[in-house]
Every structure is written in structure tokens, then in C-alpha cells.
Length: 34
Image (cartoon, rainbow, N blue to C red; front, top):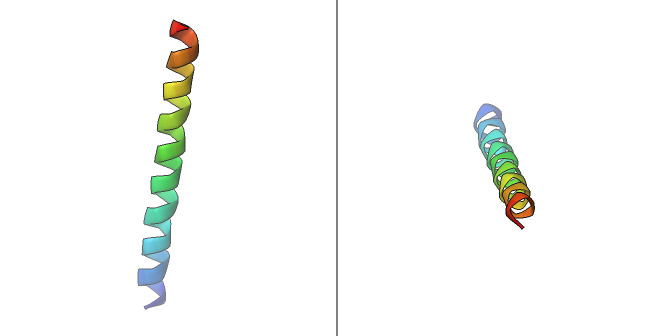
């Protein structure tokens, strides 16, 4: 069960990174086109 929890935690962690990266790129493009 520990492995399953670790797996779910990693999925959540990766989702957070992906979201942060998307927000970062979006903000960057907004700055470039401003």
C-alpha cells in the first residue's frame, strides 16, 4: 500500500509542476506581447 500512496503522491506532485510551468509560460507570453 505504501507504493500506491507514493505513486499517487508523485502524480499530484507532477501535476503541480506541470501547472506551475503552464502558468509560468502563460505569464511569460503575456509579458512578451504586452
